[in-house]
Image (tube, rainbow over all chains, first blue to last red; front, side, top):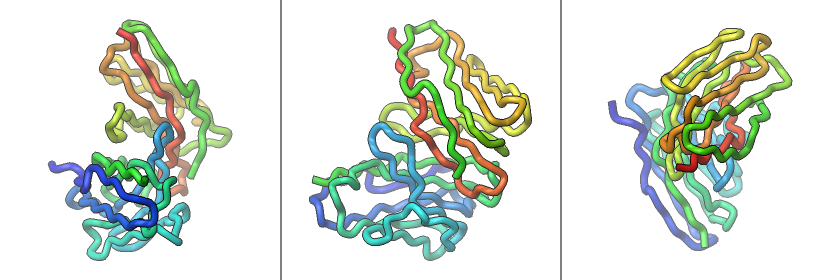
Length: 116
Length: 111
């Protein structure tokens, strides 16, 4: 079974530029999550999708971050414009249903973003 | 999401020593999951505890869920260098959709 795929693996941009990350979840997984992990901290949930609908985006900085999962499969996360404090690893995870609290999340390798 | 206190934040042990990390919640949890993240890697699911007083073992790792379902622990017997990483306990209440990661416990094993 293929795991969660993410691209790119690394990205370096200057502040005020835009960047987009892509995630392809495990086949058949209805729920997709985007996390931001700053060095030395645990992952922080940015947005959770159930199929193509948003379940929770309460911690997404909506003035600069956006995410979509148009066909309920793969997803993109965009930052426009980037700030220095956005430097982090962006993790994508998926789970089978996400409807209950017992769902296991499978993480992708992450995209390491450096904003200069 | 549900919040817990995980201690210690950092732990250095000599290879072969035991290691324990603890998670404590002020409220009753529905279940708790444990994840491990190697340096430079991504979180990997280890186990889920659901029942009061539950104890589960995976080789040298022993996971416990407290009787009141407010605390949990992970104990590693005779640590190896492959155990290096950050261990996260991730709690969930019955109604919470998302899992909330804390800062975890960062384990360093000295050879």
